Length: 127
Image 1 (cartoon, rainbow, N blue to C red):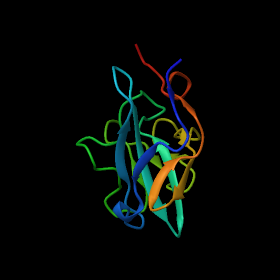
Image 2 (image 1 turned 90 degrees about the vertical axis):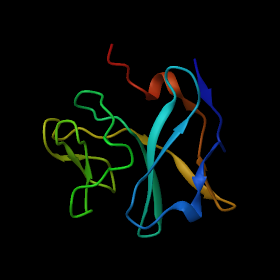
Image 3 (image 1 turned 135 degrees about the horizontal axis):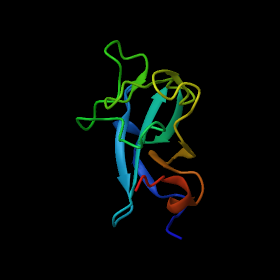
Image 4 (image 1 turned 180 degrees about the vertical axis):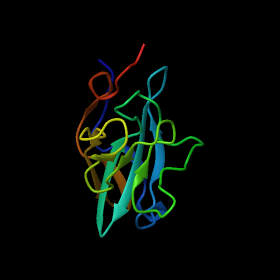
């Protein structure tokens, strides 16, 4: 079991712009945690950067997570579209499925993991 400890820093809170996701990688080896964090309306939330449809990263090229109008998250591999608030797929090949959320909290100017994270349970391996 590969664990990341509660309190692990994801990013500085001043790096976040309202409604604009920021990609991050935590951990080492073949299966680090790749995620995205975003602040919207004063809330900060994070998701695993992996589409439930085929396991691809949402952002290809890296750092491009949004639909052209910026209102939703987009998987650039197969066009699945996700709600920013809850990660639910609202259009595309995995309708009704969700991005896996990661519990985060803001503490002393940083966005941190809110609890221990079991990487083996959180990250799906597709081969």
